[in-house]
Length: 128
Image 1 (cartoon, helix red, strand yellow):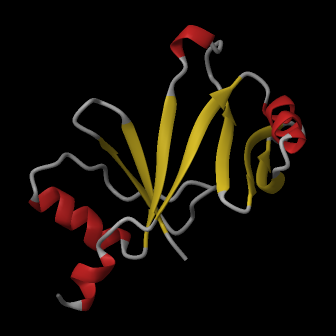
Image 2 (image 1 turned 90 degrees about the vertical axis):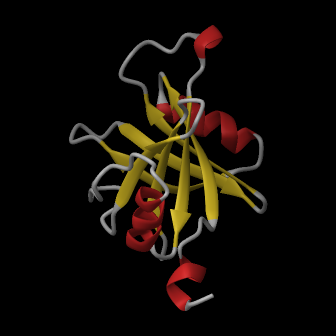
């Protein structure tokens, strides 16, 4: 296998859960021994996204745009690839619908969206 084929793979996965209050979620996970590893705040200073983790666990939480209904929890899976462009082309060649590479504030190196066969949304960011 060539270098591009070797790099066109996923190398990390961090679940992202939508929550009603990001600070409350961070405080709860700190109780479990996790630490705040990254965050983004609104212009008003409220947390809108946070990454908490410990030695072998990571979780991202983001403020939900709709009320959080416990019986309808929705989880979005965030993955990483060392060569996002090559992975995107590989997925397209396999017949999958993949978004264009975007560069949101939390992932300036780029990310794409793809839905798995069951309709779960996967966001894949450029690692490194």
